[in-house]
Length: 146
Length: 146
DNA sequence: CTGTATGCAAAATCTTTGCAGCCTG
DNA sequence: CAGGCTGCAAAGATTTTGCATACAG
Image 1: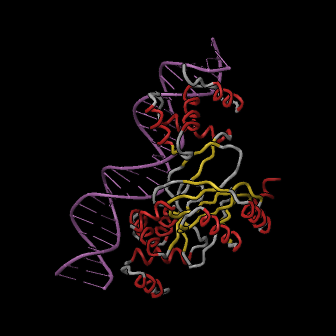
Image 2 (image 1 turned 180 degrees about the vertical axis):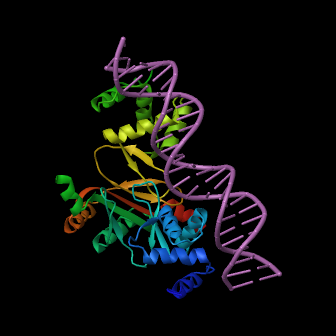
Image 3 (image 1 turned 120 degrees about the horizontal axis):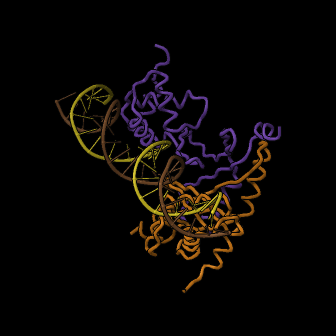
């Protein structure tokens, strides 16, 4: 059997989740996908492509559990639907191309620091933040100007 | 007649929109509301309270037109539903209390500057951005610790 | 075995659209 | 008066929930 899911089973167990097939498969999807950021529908579609018989409701439930367990992070961007990405500990923000939808990640210590200062100035206990830059990537600017 | 809608009619006309009753009322709602940030449902409810006979579909259409015309700005935050606020030219970001939902606005020139630099370094033409800090406001921290 | 997890279908939310009639300019 | 605008109802899109059954530990 190729690609035994040892690693995923351990991740799940150490998060306190039973290692069920839907959960293992969903984890695999995120680890193998070309794009880091997937919607529930994306995950469902990829599961079907693999021949897995998993309902969309289960995909939503599993994604939620993974977010609560800290395995995934959920982002909203402007599309109105949520996208999920592997949570690899390293916080980062996003730059989204409005034309092709490509998402790049970045981290800027200066911005992080100012955010903490702003929250503190106003008496907030900061829990998290979401920063997304929207624009046109280099390729799409080229296409546009043709 | 109290509160004649002269001002709103001018705003609409200078945005190239016909001054219809639903549009005038929606503008008034935003100008008079206690909270700057309102969802479509919020606006609809406030209209009904005032006795205006305006459908929810029209509220959505009017809000979209106002966003396109630059009268309103749309934000997404984490709730899954969109909220709208008057666009008064002055860009700003948001700090949202996760407990009571209160939204404060802030502007930080340093963060704005770094965003432009980051976009430029990566070859993006920056169109807009959304930064939201999530946390607990001073009042809610107090409630929590009781 | 026991209780949690799943699949299916139905419902809940939020938002958009089609269409006949109304109103602004 | 003409064309855009509205209300209503219905459809779409996304996400959640109820319930009987299946499966992990």
